[in-house]
Structure formats: C-alpha cells, structure tokens
Length: 294
Image (cartoon, rainbow, N blue to C red; front, side, top):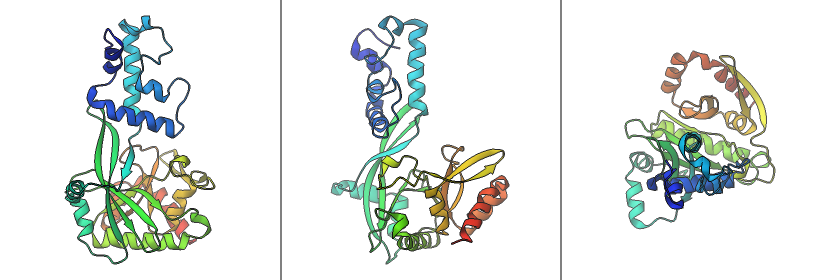
C-alpha cells in the first residue's frame, strides 16, 4: 500500500524490479494510441501524482481499491515485444546464439535465406509482476529483401517459434505478393520440413501504426468464422496469409482465445490438432475455401 512520501507512494504501486517493464508499458500505451481518459503514459508511471482523486482517498479501503485497479491494469495489459535491435556486442551474439532454437535453425543449411541475430524485449505479466526480459530474435532474409523475424520463449523440448514480423515491402497488395508467397513457401519448407519444428505461429497485426504503410488495409474486416457460437473476425492481412497456402488459422491458444492466430504446421501436428479440437473445423473449412481461389 502507499507509503508516507511521494517516492514511496509511487513505488509502492510497483516494485523496483518492475520499473523497466512499467516504463516500457507506458511507452507502448502512448505509441499505439491506447490512451483513454485518465489512463495515460503519465498515469502508468506515477498513479499517485496523476490521479484525479484527492490524496485523502489514497488511504484505507478507497486507497486499496485504487491500488488494486492499477495492479489489475498491469496484469491485463497484453504482452508485447519492443526495443528490438541487431546491434549486438560480441558477447551478446555468443549468448543468444546458444539458444537451442537458434542453433537448430542456423545449423540447418538453406541457401535461400541469410540469417541475422538480434535481441528483443518481451514485456509480460507473470508471478504477480510486470516483467521485461531480453530474448534472441532471428531475422531470415531472402535475396529480394523480404524478411521475417522469429522469436521463441519456451524450452528446448517444446520450442514455440513465433513470427514477430514479416516485411515484404511498402505495399504487399500491389507488387510484392508473388515474392512474399514464394518467401513463405520457402520458409515453411525450411522451418517445418528441414528444421523439424512442429509448428510456427504469429499474431496478425492489430494496430496499423505499429508498422505504418501508405494505406491502412491490413486490419480491416474481410470475413468471419463461427466457433461454438462465437464469431471470430478474419482481417484482410489474415486472409492474405491464408491465401499464400502456407498458413492456417485457429483460436489463440497461447494468449487470447477470443482472437485468431495464423500458423504453419507439420502434417502430424495438424492431424493431432484436428482430432483433439474438432470444434475448430470451421477455421480449416475457411482456409480450404480460400486456398481454392488462389
């Protein structure tokens, strides 16, 4: 609970070990335009100094309710990645290069891709704390400059490789679709068939300003699928990935089951998925119908 002077009151809302993660969350809130009413970057950083409530309400039951509301916000704010960089010190390249999933990719030869290792911050809530930690990120680039950024935050025994970004140029719809589809075909052959990952997944873009383009088309509604009486939106970018023939869609089993993710998978993993989750067949039906139009 809040203490007796400004610094202790402010810091009591989050631990010293959370400070970096809280600062990153505040910047994320500001950069993505998610600030609403009094929930602003400044409020995240200093919930006492930027509270609309009088100081007299910062004690007792009202003070605890305010404190709990702040902690709930830190907990429910979605995990995100930030501060990626490929300017690494030599010892960082050595450290991140030891990651099992990175070695698995780099030791599997493929003439189509060039590898670059970097690092990225993963900001998330776990064990009652907002946390931030550096993770290795691996960029695969083809000769056209089409590239994908990969990350993984699981054990060597069960690596869940995540696609952070796919960059194919300034306008995917008007000139780079063929190059991107070829890239994705090679990516699937490399990661699934040659490296042997059971699946690779990603979250389609939700905030256009994260990676601005000349026109905002990626997050617009394209179609819907119904699963157990719940309607799932398929954006134009999700549809674009499915049309490549390399991705399928399913509910987000990692973070938010109310949204869809895209994934590429081995035949064995897909077979097991269909057997254990038959209720997700509308997703597969949609993917098959879209692929037939390619």
